[in-house]
Image (cartoon, rainbow, N blue to C red; front, side):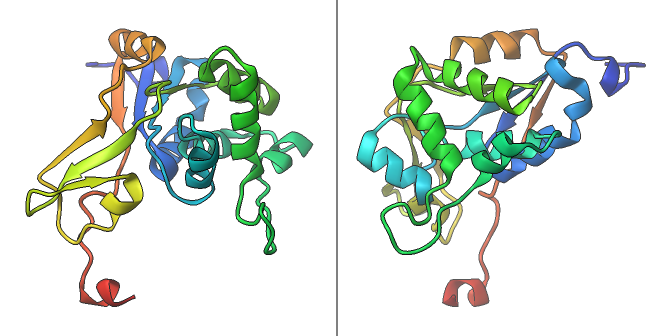
Length: 204
């Protein structure tokens, strides 16, 4: 890395999920196809969680979030992808992007094919790869040694967990491993596990 600038690197990989990874990747958009994001697939809250409970499959929320933040040419397609239903009906709270990704996943051989279709539609040049194409949840061992399942429940822990792991154990996507092995630089996106709520937060 000595005497090399970021823009001169051939392969940059960013790891993470949700808002943090999307922000990192949007700042590196100048790298175009030389940038690859490996995106977490453990989300089980909100629209994503409802889709997983109803239809199964991997979590699409973090991938959708990254795609949204990588859009540089606003279009009708990007507006549709970002649309969230309101009101009180069954679709209320659902993000259309999540539903589109899930529908394409059902129609495709594998989730990565669905992602590439949306990347092309939204003109996102950076590559985005799910960390796994097998449904998986986050599991934590809390400060008292109890197992806590699901990202939503883990996020609500009052104290940092002793351990974090995936449940069940799954294989990483081959393309993700290949990208990491070829990377000139690997960036780990910011996460929320070191946030410690204070008394005011705990009361809300």
